[in-house]
Amino acid sequence: MLEVCIDSLESAINAIHGGADELEVCSSLTEGGLTPSPGLVKEIVKMRAKVNVMIRCRTGSDFCYSEQEMDTMLSDVEVFKAYGADRFVFGALTDSQDVDEKNCERIINQAGTVPVTFHRAFDVCADPLSAVNKISTLGFNRLLTSGQKSTANDIEAIQLIKALNNTVGDKIEIMPGAGVTVENAKNFIDIGCKIVHSSCKRIRYLPQIKKGLSMGTSDSEHVFVSDENIVRKMKEVITYD
Image 1 (cartoon, one colour):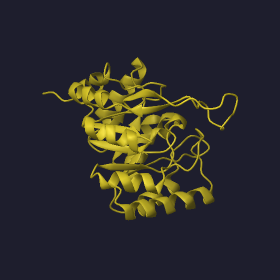
Image 2 (cartoon, helix red, strand yellow; image 1 turned 180 degrees about the vertical axis):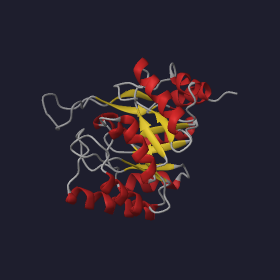
Image 3 (cartoon, one colour; image 1 turned 60 degrees about the vertical axis):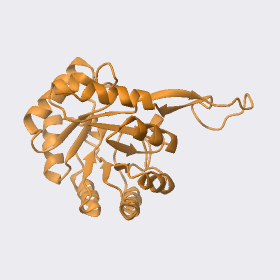
Image 4 (cartoon, one colour; image 1 turned 60 degrees about the horizontal axis):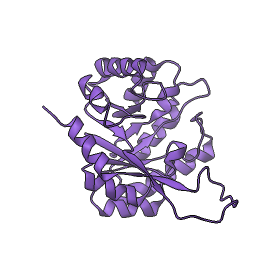
């Protein structure tokens, strides 16, 4: 199976046309993915795609959230449940880089019958094997991970992903993500993973705007969009007997 992460309606349409099994719906993928707008989720739900909604209220690789931030994200879960979200994607850590069991449990309880993925906050956990057991026990049924490396296709990352799949794969689905491409996706299927995560992206250049005028973005000349043909090729690579 293939989950495509998207942050625009254009990318969602392209991913659906390419045959994506599921969509991880975010905003700001260049920042690692943040909570999307209600409007984007509502429009994608209309397409009858499987919609997995990111719940992450701000940037930062600490994943340590204040009470006010948690209140915001709990409210987001309630809103997106009403819109028909199929899954939520969340992760929270303590300042010692361990799973924040209290705040994770709050999100799980708010989600109710909607399943929840623990996202790449896992990749900064100090003890990955201990962390994945806590994540599974809390009730998450999927883990998105790059194997604690910048790219999941790193040799050591693949070894960790394989170890996770072999030890807890019967309790929680291990989904490799970050740097997963058409060229390497089969590597993860070969080690027993049943789903991979990718943006399947290409660059789309934008019309020229006034030079020397900052809009506060890191790059205003292009955006990344999911490519229908890349999605289709990815599906072909990972779907075989």
